[in-house]
Amino acid sequence: MDASIAEPRARTFPLPSRGGAMAALESGPRDRPVDIVFSHANGFNARSYRTILAPLGERLRILAIDLRGHGASTLPAAIEGRQGWLEFRDDLLALLAAACEAPAVLAGHSMGGTTSLLAAAAEPDRVRALALFDPVVFPVEAQAAGGAAESPLVAGALRRRATFPSRAAAFEAYRGRGAFRTWRDEQLLDYVAAGFRETPDGEMTLTCTPQWEASNFRTHNYDPWAAFHASRCPIRVLRAEEASTFRLEGHEGDLGGDGRIQVETVPGTTHFLPMERPDLVRATLEASAAL
Image (cartoon, rainbow, N blue to C red; front, side):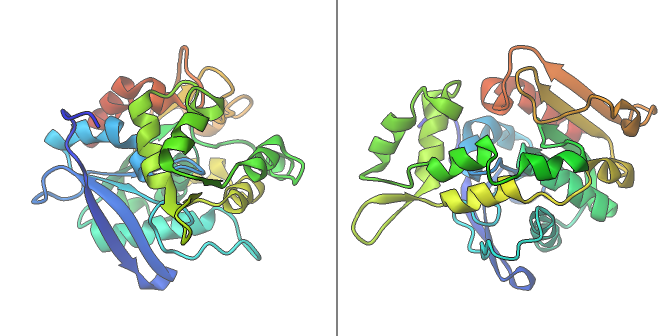
């Protein structure tokens, strides 16, 4: 662990209306309102972003949350009969009501960015600004095709090895490969630390099961462009240059022309932009919190 980065505080927020509790990592002064609530990508967890977010704790209070079916959260992750990502939205809104005494900046990566956008659209008065890092935004008509059972993302999730003899073995299996090829070692160590739990026989198994991760790729059921229109706050989107999940082409007019929504493509980045450009992510979050 980088000794220069303070260890965040583990928090648990009971959300009885949502059927369980949401886990979070908190950084920054306890005596100020929450400045930023950060939501992670599908299959990951709050701790994966520790080295990115914790340095901001010198000035800002930040909650990085574990979404339903991820990390240490105990919200039920039932696949059958799912209604899509709106359940993540409603979990986040319940968390805001429980933890935030004033409007906060909502931020997130990939699915977490989309969740933040949907929450801002549903309850604009709770959100001061949005900072979205390669959110999953594409036309409604493409969502069914993108989430079909034969989708490479679904197939890849279902092929994921769920159990390792130790966290060290998982780290070595992931290091420099696949989605983790651009990650630094300390980032991967953080993902593995919170991404696995011990089984009764002493092995380590994923906290986000391959089936749940695949279900998130299959089931979307939201209109991102309607969400942009319904939101009222300033929005900053950082988009990956390579294989971005923010598919703006043909929808530029849906972002309005008043400058409230700003989109920037970051050269040399992949979908894992936060891990590749933590400096830019921190600067964006600080600017959003200053609005």
